[in-house]
Image (cartoon, rainbow, N blue to C red; front, side):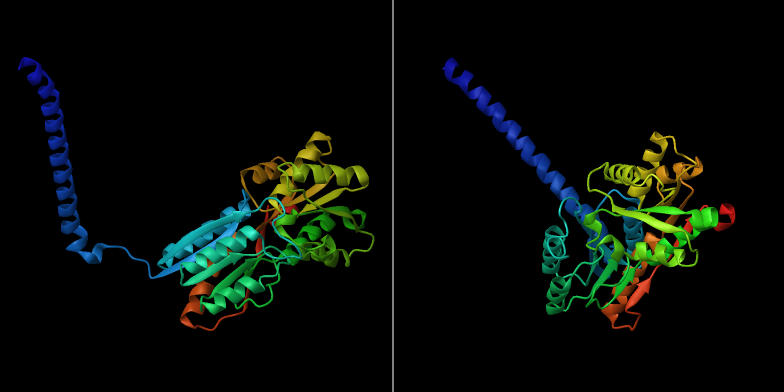
Length: 341
């Protein structure tokens, strides 16, 4: 008998523990239902709901341009009562596919987002990319699309927000011409291939430089190179360019990675002051290089404004409001022009 009671005691203890846990969970669930009823269910006006659902698909790149772009998208979405679904696609490897088509990763995410039937889509498109397929898929579902691009709007885009690479290059060259005049021998650093499907001579940034040089006979572009996709791609491209063309006395950069890479090469070679660098965009590292005099100036594209205008444009399309097919956003120069004289 005592042996049976000894076996029964653990069973009773376990049963009591389970009963206690069940009672605790019941009371916890009851409290949750009471709290829910006391707030949301009894006061639905206090619940924050967005008026629109938008999906934005942008490159996953650690670059101040894209950081500012996302910041602008988020700020304007909050201001305009929009629920923003931010999706990032890979910007590494052979991302442009073949023949200047949109990367497979970006196309896949675009297709997934479409199935959620958002009120609108925002898509960042590198230079020279054909997006006819994805735009056709969106039209079939009657979902408006606004494209963001570094320059000329891709064909077929109902609305596009672009920066102005041509005038970015023109202003960068203008700064150098003010310093060196006809003695300028320029090397050009262009973004890596994930961000452009164009040949260097086709790039609006490069064309803007040539337009500025036309007013100053004697000044010329000695070489134009594209950054490599690796983490040290900017340094490698700049070092190779200077090795092949030692007469270069100016480096013009189209993005922040090229700016930082070129600056590192110039510092390592002890050529600060002999080779002028005009960079692009602004993060803590670029600003530090400007303050130290390694980088003479930087052309800062207003990516945040691009994000804000893209949200406004998609809402205009959604409401049927007329607007410009292409919205161009400018840039600023740091330090200001007056300080560069």
